[in-house]
Image (tube, rainbow, N blue to C red; front, side, top):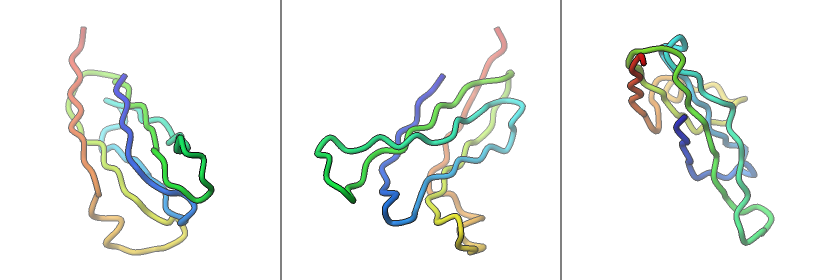
Length: 90
């Protein structure tokens, strides 16, 4: 299991969404928001994803910072972050 932590602020309406091109190779959890230690209302924190391998292979997991209700083709096409996941059969 790999943990990916990305900064963000859900009070702006934005949240991180993860997508994988090969769901048969990896599974990605829903994001869990970790509040900042200062406890200030409206402060940003960290979004945490867990990536687990399901079978052997290579794939990318893309992370996009979006407002889910806004439809913008550029947002759908360009990831903000991309992680290469390599899994070997044991």
